[in-house]
Amino acid sequence: MPLSGWLTRGCDSAGRCRDMAAPLVTTPRAFVLDRQARSITRNWRIAIAALIVIGAVAIVGIIVQQFPDTRGLYETQDLSATFLPPLSDGHLLGTDNLGRDLLWRIIAGLGVSLIVGVSVAVLSVLIGLIVGIFAGYFGRAADGVSSVAIDVTWAFPAILLAIIFAGWLGPGLLTVALALAMTGWASFARVVRGEVLTLREREYVAAARLLGVSRVRVSVRHLLPSLYPVTSVMAVFFVSTSIIGEAGLSFLGLGAQAPTPSLGVILAEGRDYLNVSWWPVVIAGATLVIVVLALNTVSDGLRDRLDPRGRVRA
Image (cartoon, rainbow, N blue to C red; front, side):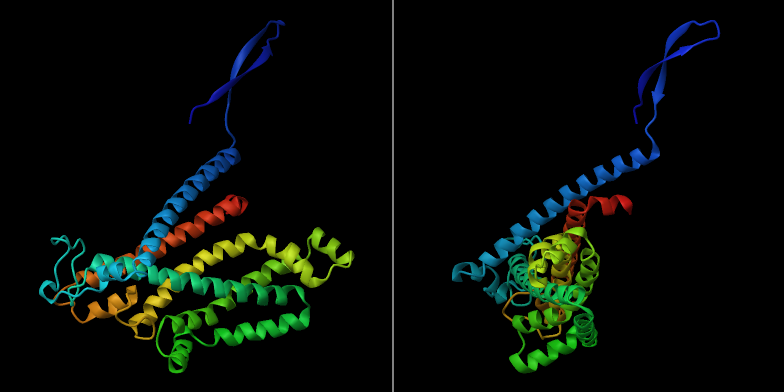
């Protein structure tokens, strides 16, 4: 790190004075802050790049499912071209057991997984915000009732709720979304409750209460905007966890059903042919890992951008 200098004036015992150059050394604290700032900027740029790539692939995956001609890209079966390896002629990632192009099935399945993930995140955030604000700001009785609801919800794993909804609605993406949302909101509500317990002690909230503003209006006008950073970060994180949950439930047969493409369905279909073709399972699994890591990168970058002081303190 280059050092800059500053001039100072010194005098000897005979009264002769001269200019002396003294190095200006950056303090350790300033150096750490500068390095943290550069790290935050770098992470934010990486997060933006990851979000653009995921968004582009998701848009393509959603579009190809809307038109009969494009659905043929991943639904068309060719029994004369089954189990083609990657980099085959006309099939970049090969084909599956029915001769369907694996690349387009991965893209379409990624679109399905992201739709489910976003839907679950939206439902979880909405329910979690309502319950969390109600618990943290509307008194001890409301806190007690909300805490009981959260504890009861945590007692039911997502797989159990998925089985219940599958028996009621039948297996499908709606079953997965409801099962994941009915368990995911509880963890978000606990985080929101903790934030609200801190925010309600702020001066502007106390001033609003002294002016006679109702609790509902204070919640909407003052608490919700202050909860935007934690809401945004956790929403992106919920998308990644919901994608994993959807893939797991679809793998077990409770989620997306064939011929609907999904990463979990591709994993389940390829499981029975591992001794013949390993690439559908490996490619679908690698895609799932990459997407989750990319979304976690977006979540980290969003956290750094919205609350850089928390990153510096860490």
